Every structure is written in C-alpha cells, then in structure tokens.
Length: 364
Image 1: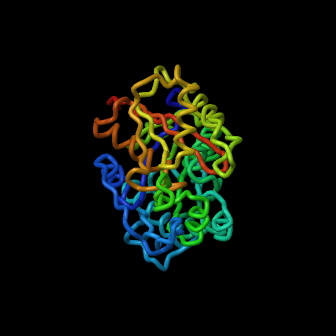
Image 2: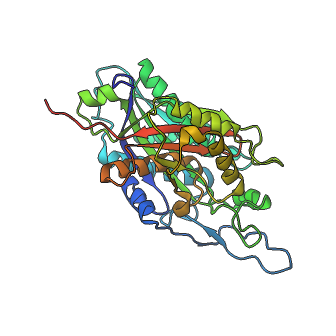
C-alpha cells in the first residue's frame, strides 16, 4: 500500500494490570510479568463434593478503587489510557487545524451481555471522554460493542473515514473490565472462569488502550513520529459461537485471516499475536483455522498471547497487541518487520490485521 493510502499509528497509550502505560505494558509482556492475585470481588461456585470455593484469581489494575464498578470503572480505565496517549502526543497541536476536519473518536467497548447492556456505555462513554479531552474539532464517529474482535475491527472504520477525507485523524479507544461481580457470575455459571471446577478457563482481567491514527502521508508531511502502519482489516462471522453446544467451525476466523493476509503480505507471517486466553473453544478455533490456512500461514511463526500476562481484557486486547508489535519493532526483538494480529469475541465476530514497522525515514 502506498504512503498516500496507508494509515499510520502515531501515538499509543494504555493502562493494564501490568503497566501504567503502553510502554510499560509491552515491556512487562515481553518479560513474562503477570500480577494474577486472589480477588474478593466475586466468590466462585464451589467444586462438586461440598468443598468450599477457592478465592477467585484475577488480573486487576491495582490502583483502581474497588468502589469503581461498571460504567464508572470503564470510564476511569479509558481516561488513564488517553492520558498516557497525551503524554507523548498532543492532539491539540499534533496536526493542522486549518483543514476544517474533525478528530473522530472510535470506541471499542465490552461485548454486550445482560450485565454490560445495563451500563449504557454506547451512549455515555463517548460524550464523557469528549467532555474531558475533546475540543471543537472532536466528535464520536463510531462505537463497537464487540469486545475483543471489535478492538481490531474498528480500526477498519477509522481507516475508511481517514481515507475518505471526512476525518483528519482518529482516536481509537478500547476499554473493558471483567472485574465485576455480576459479569463474573455469568461466566462462572458457564464454567468459563478458571477455578477449582474449571481448570481450563480464563483469568478475568481489565484494561484500556488509546491509539492515534492518521494518514501516513500527513504524518510524513508534519514529520510525526510514525510508530507503525497497518493493512486492510479482515473480518468474519463464526456461526458456532462459544455459547453453543458445538466447537467453533473456524470459518469466521479463517475468513478474517485470509482477508488480512490478502492485503499485501509477501510471505508467511513470522509473528502472530492473538487473544487466546486459556479457553478450549478458542484453542480449537485457532487450530482449525490454522490448518485451513496452512499454505498462507506457513510454519514456524512465533505466536504470542498477552492473556498469559494480563488475563482476559476484552476490548482492550487489540491495543495491547499493537503495543507489543510497536515495541518489538522499535527495540529490535520482533522476528519480522510485520505482525499478524487476530481476535475473536463470544458473539461470533472475528477480526485480523497486519501491523507493519515504519519505513526508515530519509532526510532531505
């Protein structure tokens, strides 16, 4: 893709259980650091046999107040991620305001379930963030409540808006929390939380990320620090979702990966970042898709899953994977100058994208 049509990532921020910034989070994942601890927010269902339940193991942002729950907790996570973005990148002065175009805010939110639906995030979070950080040239452009998959799929919405000329730049925020009693009760009921009665389950986590996107040509023109670019976002829909009685068919993920790889990959990916989280359903899905795409994916790729360190963080995972890729490119430990990212959610949505190291800047 030419610089004219490419979309650049020129800023990133994050807060996770293992980092107060995107840089710290990526370094902690690289070092294999985790902060899985016993949490009293929810008491898991006990194993059969009458033994008392063991405490819940979770991955929470330690500096968040226990009294912050639901929408208030999501807002606080998002605020911290945007603040981290702003430490390195001034949105007010980062691009020409004379162009008359707005900065679009794109929000990736928790996947909707009976609990998160009551939080009202789709209507409330965007205005609350703009009230805190926006100005006259800011507006909420799109909201996705597709959890993990939405954190990558919404990149495609932002890229389309920038390429069309309706936006000069985009801020993409992904925020999610599973540190919630009612949400954990739903997951535990379905044997999805790692516990004494569900050894193959997720470790609940939380986090938020914020990305600044703009056209690569504009970034070059204003000599912005270009952290990475990304290719076409592939999406797909899985008919046999995790709530059903059958394993994933792998069709949705296969479609998403094939579309992402068709967007210009010259060779099989050597680095794959994904949202495998310890649940058998996702492992089976990845196995099925990787067999179907054996020719395109090749063999020998390094596979990384940040859930080993942060737990299941839903709509924040896309930004964390991008932070991993950016750090790998910048610090020289990436096995290749590009990474293939994929993620899936409970409801069937799947998304994938290639993230590429920036080309060396030439002077003159």
